[in-house]
Image (cartoon, rainbow, N blue to C red):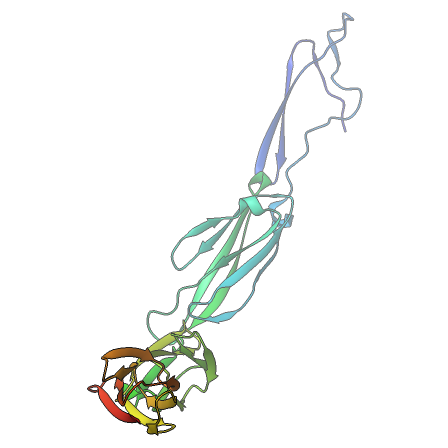
Length: 317
C-alpha cells in the first residue's frame, strides 16, 4: 500500500468502489504542531470503512415451509419461516389477491396461518404465497410456495321422517333417515337432553312419554347439519279399568273398602251421592268408608274423552 502525503489543512478525497455501491470517504487531515508543510496522514497503510457484503452471497430467508401442500376448501395452512440477522423487513404476499401480511415483528423466526380461497370453478386451484425479505445494504430475497385447494362435497341429510307425528301416550313411533357424505351421526331428544350415536342412514323405534322433538345431526367435511322432527303425544281416552268394593252389604258401624284403577285419567274423583261430598283421589288407589246408611259412591275419571263414571251401592242394614 503506498504512503499518501498532503499539505496541512487540506482534504483527502478517496473513491472506493464496492459491489453495487460507491462509498466516498473524506477525512480531514490531522497535522502535527511541527512546521512541516507535508507529512503522512496515517503512519501505515490506507484504511477504508467496511465494504457492503456481496448481495449474491448474503442469505436472508433460511427456511420457508407450509403445514400442508394441498387442502380442502375451508381448511387452513400455517407457513413457518426462519431468517438471518441481515433481514430487516419481512412480509407474506397472497399472489391471488395481492394482500400482504407484515411479518417483520416475527424476525428471525415465526409463523402465520391463512385460509386459501377455494376454486371459483372446477375442482381445484393453486394458491401461491410469497415470502418477501429485505435486508441491510439493499439486499432482497423472495421464496414462493404453492398450495393446492380442492373442492369438497358437503354432507347432506336427504330425508328424516316419521310414520306418525301425533301418537297416544304409550304408542311407538318410527324415525327413518337417509344421508350422503357424512362421517357420523347422532340423535338427540331435545326435551331430556339425551343423545345417542346412530348410523348415517337408518331407523329407530321410540316410545315418547310426552311431546318430544328429536334432532338428527350429521357430521362430515363441512359444518354439521341438522334436521328436527316433533312428535306430539296425547294422553288418549281415559278409562276406568277396575272399581270394586270389599262388600256391598254391611251392618251399621261396619266399614267397606273401595278400590279402583284408571288409564289416561287426568283427574279422578269419588262422590258420595247421598251427601254430595266430592273427593279428589289418585288415579289408582283405595279408600275405607263407614257409611251410616245405604250409600252410592261414584268414581269419575276425567281426561281427553268425556268424563267416565261408575257407581257402587253399599247397602247398610
